[in-house]
Image: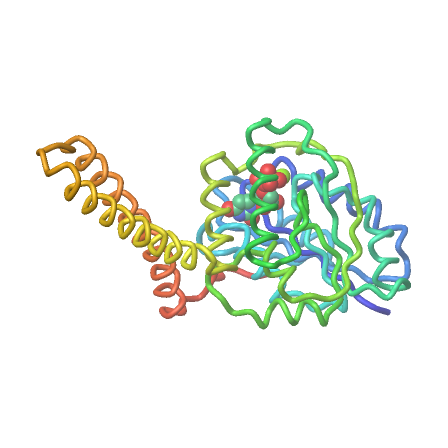
Length: 308
Ligand code: UDP
Ligand code: MG
């Protein structure tokens, strides 16, 4: 019988995890043609998440857990879970039931019978989310699709049902700065998109603030496109040309009208503007340099403390 691994990154999910397990058990109980295993990854939780995992593992031999040595972030937790998985299929699911388990049979059917390599899900609405966040999220996806030439779906979740080939492709990407939404798109494969309506988490709180999402989107951009570096050189070129025009203009004006001392305020404005611009551009370059530095160090993406 084919096996499917359910990978669940968990960070402070003591309230949600038991509900998650029950809900998933109900759905997979009816999927009799597949054998299931759970890979629960404790991403350095500070609550009782790990002991809940242990008690689930004691009751159910299909449950395995992996405790990371500290909080490494969801990307690292997902990677750890995928590396540990042994199934012919791998599903990644959040522990908070925002990824509806009812979709599993449909997702399985897509990869089993419809010649897809992967079934992915997306939320068709962003109900219950602050408007400003939705607005920026949409802009981000538009921008990324345009500049990174990645096929990233707006509203796509990490909730996916993948064949082993695709999982192995993802695992072959060894980068330290992992941006899964980009990685999933980058490896390619045939993906079926399944829509569902956004739902609230069953318990606990989201770990994302607006600011952390903003940083995450910058990470994603740096990880998947070098377009900002090109923009920087274009901006530089643009201002060079502008400066040349200004020189000619000032020269001609001085010839025609003499050179009374003027223009101190405009000079001050220009100096501030251009120093700002230069710092901004060095900042962009610095960001890429910093990422490159981290990649070269080649530190492990996560460290396992305990396994069971
Ligand atoms: N998560 C994790 N490590 C982290 C943050 C989150 O493993 O540092 C897990 C979390 O437990 C949940 C999933 O990632 O299962 C999604 O997190 P969350 O619900 O906070 O994100 P949202 O659904 O709001 O995007
Ligand atoms: Mg959530």
